[in-house]
Length: 69
Image (tube, rainbow, N blue to C red; front, side, top):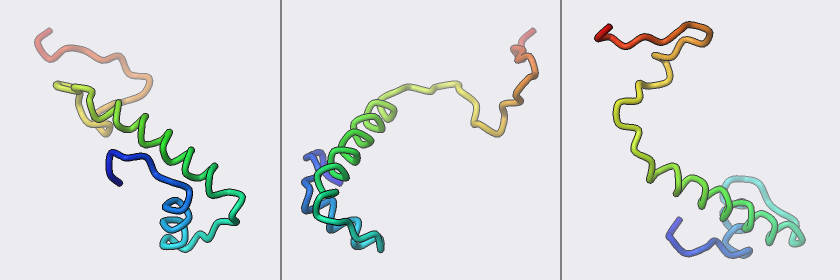
């Protein structure tokens, strides 16, 4: 998807391509939802995760320690 917002007809076309035909009254809502998700993901893409380890390295409930300690 480009930087331009998704229009209701485009949302309907993409949904149909995915095998999810939408009733006409849902086109605008689907486009608005897709545009909102795109705006949230765009913000996440700008974050610098730098030294953040990948998710499999995280152990819930365990205290995290620096390797230098």
